[in-house]
Image (cartoon, rainbow, N blue to C red; front, top):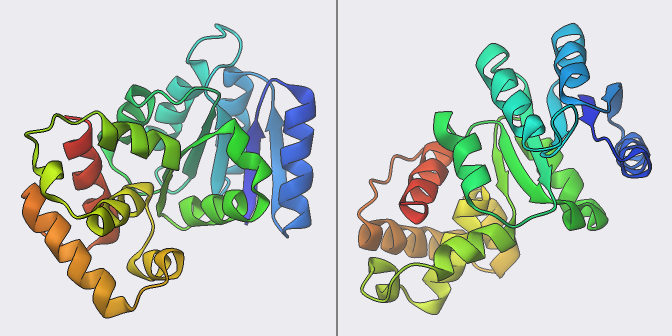
Length: 214
């Protein structure tokens, strides 16, 4: 797997590069600003780009805007955005064109090495990965008269894992449930939220996120 890492904090960037290398990923480029990120991604066409949301030259959401350019120009390159803030409008903006090959994690999540590596691989493979804290904020802010209020505690757990981008198998492992039980809970969640069960994981994730962000 080939990766470009864009992070203006040198120590964090070097830490991420070392972590990826130790997990048998090839870092083909590093960037400290959004413009260099785009140059490196265009030159190397990696499987995934890991991008800090706030980068020079503007030190605002330059990384996010570069990530959107990458998605538009090179749809085969996954994009995993790292942020210091649990704001849900950033991931919704990133996901506006689809959930395939997209991730959004808080920087603290890098310390969870296995979870971070899994997210990188999932995004590179065309899946999605959304930070659990961001998903929890999106679920928790819905009004009391919303269909979310009808969900059982277990269905809410399943919903959050669906929105994070986990597959049915991943949800089974996380909640220690049988595949049949997970399928039953997912059917209940989708029915109560009025979301059609398309059978395609990433479209399902996007539908759930669109609902939560509405």
